[in-house]
Structure formats: structure tokens, C-alpha cells
Image (cartoon, rainbow over all chains, first blue to last red; front, top):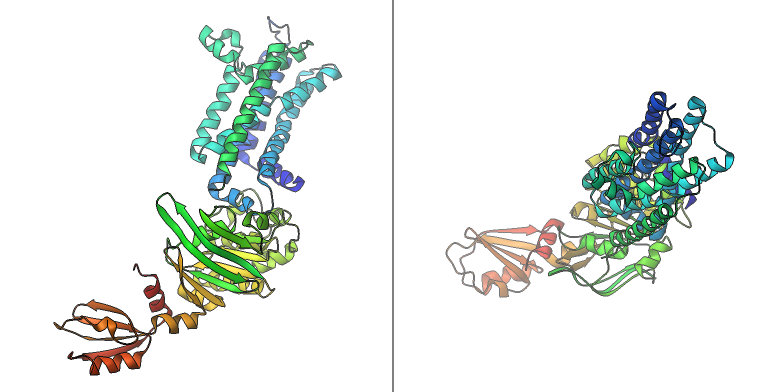
Amino acid sequence: MTHYLKVEVLRMLRNKRYVIFVVAFPLGFYLLYSNLWGAQTDETTGIKGSVLLMVNMAAYGALASSVMSTAVPWAQERHSGWLRQLQITPLPAWAILATKLVASLLLVLPALVLVGLAAVLTQHVSLPAGQWAGLLAFMWIGTIPFVALGLAIGSMLRPDTAQPVAMISMFGLALLGGLWFPTSLMPEAMRNVARVLPSYDYAGIGWRIVAGQAPYGPDVAGIVAWAVALGAVAVFVYRRAVVRA
Amino acid sequence: MNAISFTDVTKRYGDVLAVDGLDLEVPAGSTVALLGPNGAGKSTSINMLLGLLRPSAGEIRVFGEPPETAVAHGEIGAMLQEGELIPELTVAETVDFVRRLYPNPLPREEILRLADLTELAGRRANRLSGGQTQRVRFALAVAGGPRLLLLDEPTAAMDVESRRTFWENMRRYAAQGRTILFATHYLEEADENSDRVVVIARGRVVADGTAAEIKAGVAGQTVSFRLGDQPAAGLESLPGTTGVELQAGRVTLRTTDLDSTVEALYRKTTLDVRDLQVHGADLEDAFLALTKES
């Protein structure tokens, strides 16, 4: 099992597309945006631009990583016969799903840590140790709904459809969650949609933590509800995908 | 002890009967070829042995256990018809990953040697040729040191030279006292690489024995002659005759007893027999006769 985990992490780190979208993108955008707007202060929250951008880009990286490391690779494994190769070994079926979940969570860390480091090193962002710990822990565990979404997409769709669906989900969630621009700039209807999405709750909790406030209750409830709902869907469609006819 | 036993196994896909009351026992340590045309039920049978498909009726045992249990205990290794590898992993990493999933795997170096992969150990899977990928898939099948090895048309994508080496490697594995069942629609492969050939057609066993027995027993030989406009009625009841084919005025009798058939042809019929020819059957004829739509 631990070896399987190591193998899963290793292969994603060798995947160029993963590294570009998930590590290079958020890092590059952070460096660019923080140079442009890092010194500004957000009017509604009073958070400095360099800190807010750190949360947003780390959140984008984590979100992208969660979906990218699950949906398409898993759809491909099902489609290419690799799943069957695993099914005829002593590895139990639940272990495949569990390993994918843990591997995907581990793969979220490079984006989080690198964007954080870039913020500290280039923008001299400093937060109290407790806030750093809380932010990192939350932004890590908070990706569970996105991992579940990716796994569900991978269990349901063929690789060629999983690819665009994963991309649209990822960018859609990032955009509507307010990771690229504030939701306050969105039209009313769009904002109403945004509010119910897990990425909105995810980013919202991050902003509260860096503002030194306790996470907002409905945000926490929202993300937990999404984690449970998407987790249930992921398990359900996974069982259907590996079922013996 | 039987490595494999099928007891009256049936598998239906909707209206299609893929396997129809299959009975088959394979003693441990033997190498058996499952020979049959496409759609005969070979892959379905292998997938049921692996627990990937469940029989609609009947019972399957692998070393006395249900297939799922045998798989969980690492008793079975298999090379299925299709299967890609993880593109980002090297050959050695892939082999090592799979062998570690088994309770009593073979040493990594031995697996690589068995599949002729020692020199390719460091190569990533996305840089392998089709034939090389097949060798890795064979390596994965033997990695866990399974007592039962199942190969579903393993040489389908290989050239002649790769095939030869592949069967050599398989025989080296079989020589360790393992049981091997391989599916093929190539007669020579079945003939050359197995102790026993089980011919299946339309989901049933239609012949079972050594290649020599199947050649001798079932198809026997053929006698053909020019019949012209004479009636063919009654030819099928000649002694030893198992089949009659009529084509362009020429009749071919399939017989298990050539002498009696020919004798009766002259003595017991009033036919004007012209241009008589006798052929010894080969395995190909036997196979065609056995698997022909009846």
C-alpha cells in the first residue's frame, strides 16, 4: 500500500502537464500578480494584496491539483486496462480508491508550499505561526471535495470526455469561487451560483484565516457538506466502475 | 489436485450464450491450450477464472477456492488481451510495484530475466514498442510467482521472432511446476506449447486431448472423389464416415476409418467413383471440423 502510494505520487510528479498546470501556473501567476497588485489592500477585508493573492493562487493550485491528479489519470487507467491489471492482483478494490485519495492529497502540497514560499520570499509576507499552520492545514484538507469530484469524473467518463469535463470543472470552480477575481465584481445571478460552490467556501475560509478571524460557520458547513456529498458520489460511481459483471 | 475446475459453467450476456455448460478440469502442473475461434468463449472463461466476470450458473474453483479468493491469495497471474502500462513509470518500477502486491513474489531480477527485460529495466513505459510492452505484461503476470498463469492470446501483437522467445520464456516458467492455461486461435501454438489441447467452440468443449490425439481421433482422414451428377444420398452412412461435403461435383468424406470407408464405397454403393484422393488430416482440418457451425 505505501509502495503503491509512492508510485502514484512519483508518476504524477513526472507528468509534465500536471507540473505545468498545477505547480508552474499558480506560482507564475502569483509572482506576476503580486508584482502588480501586491502592495494594494483589499477594501472589504483589509487584507494586503500579496497575502490575498497567496491564498487565491495556492487555492487555485490546490484545486487544480486535486482534479488533475485524479480525473484523467483514473479515467485512463480504467480505459487502458490498467485497472484490470490491478484487479487481478491481491490488492483489494477499496485500496485503489483510498490510495488515489491519499496520493492526490499529497500532490496538493507542492502547490500550497511553493506559493507560500514565493509569498514569503518575494513579498515578505509574514503571518503568525498559528495562522500559517491553520491556513496550510485547512487548505490541504479542504481539497477533499475536489479530489472526490475528480475521482467521480474519472469513474464515470472515458478519458477523452473526462479531460474537458475536468478542465471546465476546475476553471469553473476557480473562477466562480473568486480565486481569479472577487465575487463582488460578478453579476448578481453569477454570484448566487458562486455562493453555493465548494470553491467559494474554500477560498472564503482561507481569507478569514489570513485576516486573523475564525472561519465563517456557513463556509465550514458548506465545504463539509460538499465533501460528504461528492465523497458519496465518488464511492458510489467507483463501486459501479469496478463491479464484476 | 486440480488447479482449475469448471463445473457446468454458463455465462450469458443478455440473449447471447458465451459459455454453455462448460466442464473442464486442469490438474496442477500441466500446460493447457484453450483453442478456439473468435467468440468461442475463451476470454469469457479466462475472465471468469480471474473473478472479473461471474458465471450465470455453475461453479468455478481455482486450487479448490472461488476465483476471487484465489486472486486475493496471489495464486493467479494473468496476461489479458489488452492493457497499457502507466506511461510515466519505468519497466523496473512497474514490475517492482506489481510484485510487491503479492505475498510470495519472485525476485525482481528473476522476473526481468524471465521476460527478457533486463536491458530495458530503466526505460519508461511510454517509450516501449508494442512487443516490448507485451513482454512487460508477461513480466507482470509472473511477478507474483503465481501457481496458475493465465494467458489470453498472448502473442496476438507479436512478430515471429518475439513469439518464439515468448514461448521459450513461458516454458521456462512452466518448468518450475506451475500450471498454465493459454488461449489461442493459432493451431501451431497450441500444438507446440502445450501438453493438452482443449478445443472450445460456441462455449462448449468439443475436443480434449493431446494435439496428436485430436488429429487422429476426431477428423481422421478424408477421401474425396468426383461425383458428377450422381446422388450423394447414403454416403453419410458409410462405415467410419463422420462428414460429407459436396462442392462443385466433388464429394469429400471425412472418416475415422479410411479402409472401411473406401471398401464400402466400392462394394456397397453403385457409384461410379472417379479421381479418388486420400488426405491425412492435419490439426487445421481437425480444428475446422470441430469448430464448424453445426
